[in-house]
Length: 377
Ligand SMILES: [Mn+2]
View (spheres, rainbow, N blue to C red):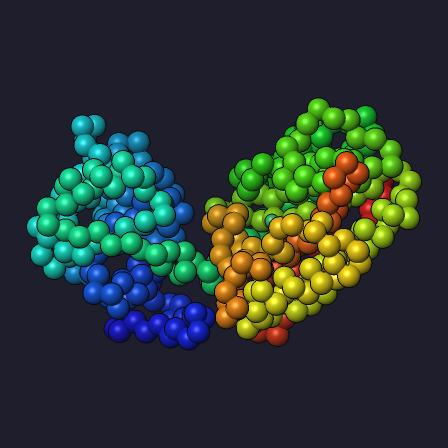
């Protein structure tokens, strides 16, 4: 059956979600006359085959679907990727050597796609030494492109990862108290996510209190939390391989008027930009909504990062809600996006509020349900 992919203005619309993922990739490659691919990036191997371990995947148009791995993973690969054949490399062979041997003489599959943004220069040199007349061509993130729109199973995993993260956050609120260190809070939160069913955190948990809050990616320190401070908690977990991402900023004890103003500005910006998220919304335009609100409130230059990003098997995926996106870039129903404006005042504090949402036809569905009203502990 012919696989069709409709590409319009950089926006993809898979009418054939039921077609298996390797076939969709091969269809994209066929347009460039490429009839074989070698896949190294672990998330891409997982996406195409179901296999979650180490190894290299080989696909050809004439039907080769092979995972090359070693003794440690052979049994796992056979279980997780039943539609692939699994080849075990010998201790003296690299995965790449075995993969190229499997492809055989460079005939039909003379042009071979590889992930130009994944393998190292050293790996590339070795591949070329064994090229055997083959020509390596860049994949140009075609697999990542396939991964942008999630199917129902993927969405359900992200929804569950969001639910676990929020449950964990709510369960530790009574423990966020003056005298506790940022590192302690990070550990308590990570343990709680684990208790509620997470495989692991989806990134290093960020706990930033007081003046550390002006560092968007602060590393939790031995600094103790104090009354009158904001504490920003940016956290997420992995469930069934899929990531969640959520940020809340809470206050300890008294809240000054200046603190309230900054919090309400971020919240207003978050709600307004979130409201604009829907199928077809411009990635740059959504970012601008939050940025304009923050700038107009007098905080120009204090929101120095993009508004949000897609996520899935990786915590940061494309597209982004960002000024760096092409003007024509839009988000589509079935994408999972974060919306996370912030204001950062060096030496004083910072506030960030983030949700993970599913983009739908007419809007979005929020997956991180924890309240965004300012929590004062
Ligand atoms: Mn994020």
